[in-house]
Image (tube, rainbow, N blue to C red; front, side, top):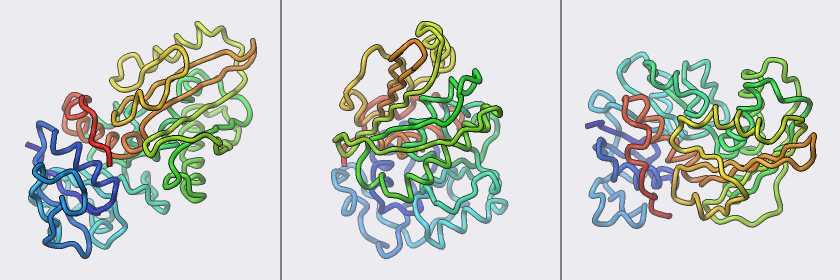
Length: 306
């Protein structure tokens, strides 16, 4: 069994993570740390876990007794694991805090979007960061084009998501994250990434991203490019016609729709669950890869809604 600890276990995203992990067949949830909550039942903070999780919040986390630590906090305890990774060379660390000052490459942490970085995650990786929700969906919609050197000029990404994900700081960090990955994938791409909020209502789990960009390729060729990129992945699927958000809510699935709006314009639409993508689902997906498990282990069923 994989012994798991969580630093920052009182956050809403940590609660979603716990709801996934208690149904994971290869996980033992051993430690949950949250400042000020020592001794309280985890289920008293994360509702719906009564009768499912008897764990109490611990006063600290002992990495010597764990195989992996999920970080979703900016506390002294969490920073101890971020900055002193050499002390526990066998410990896997998955950072899902989206810390704006975290330079994950300087800390030798892999970018944890399996659709573009699965090989690095399965080849001895010990530390990874979970991407931001808007960045993850946007990159999934643009990465196949960047791989084929098809991005030209500036790219405008329109998105709709819940208000807690759509702060100015989070949107700016997501923009930088998207730009970093695309420029690294297509060196010839020198354009800027512009994020624009869609005036569209979504649920508290909803995430929708649309991109309209120049592309003269036939739609069948574009489909081939996307299918070649994602056909061996377990959570990203190409669909015909726009899909409502409830098709993915509570799951790790990401659905991508392609449409030619004119002979020289392409529209890419992506829908996902923002509490799973860029959150608990990606964190567990990364853990599965780090430990050599099948990607879908523990992620077959819908997570409980919070």
